[in-house]
Image (cartoon, rainbow, N blue to C red; front, side, top):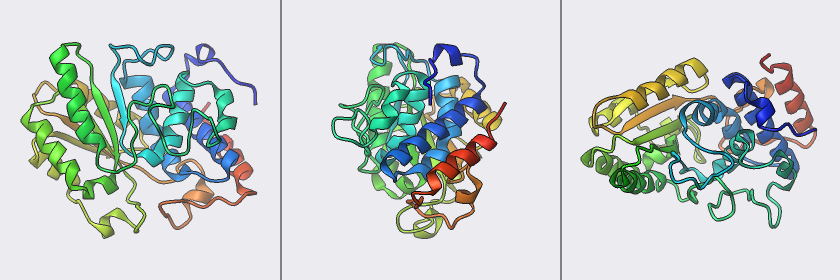
Length: 283
């Protein structure tokens, strides 16, 4: 597949961006024959709105001090973030072929020291929000006006450190902190709501002192409105967007399977998944 420069894609819609993020993720999964593609397909709309509507960044200069910070608390979602960074032009599309290989800048579990645009090394779930609190405090003291975004999973709502960080953020009135919860109701031990339910999720965050919204995480218009409301909110509260997403979104035959934390894709199914995704491509 011929690579397309970010400049030539500058007029793409958010729907096209989300589609491309899904395609990049599937192509990486095909390289290794595995990967957390179910989560990547599900969260692609959230990433498209983050990187192509909300975030203030410079793709050619991922270390720019004035940038908004995007933290991936869920280290195993690295394939999804790589796909977004490729689409944004931070990483070249040609590097898809190196995914998960020795000396790749895209290891299967994300590492900040390897990958431009990856702010933290996630993976020990429940740590991202605490790091985000520290970053938001530091950036506020510098007075630059940047936002810190923390993408976390619904499984992380079962971690005590998440709620300690939530209390700290509210206490310090971190209005420059936006947490995004990918609520796909899946984790290693089964559905999140059956393993350790955090419901009512939006109300819990509100009770902890946050400006809280819950939206369909696969509805681009709803996501844009939620991100805009989070940034524009004039109160001192930190902000959270709970995004209900569907694993494997965009590939119906995978969506229809009994969902698990790690969706198995057979060797002969990668090409089929890519073809089905392209059939539904936005025009």
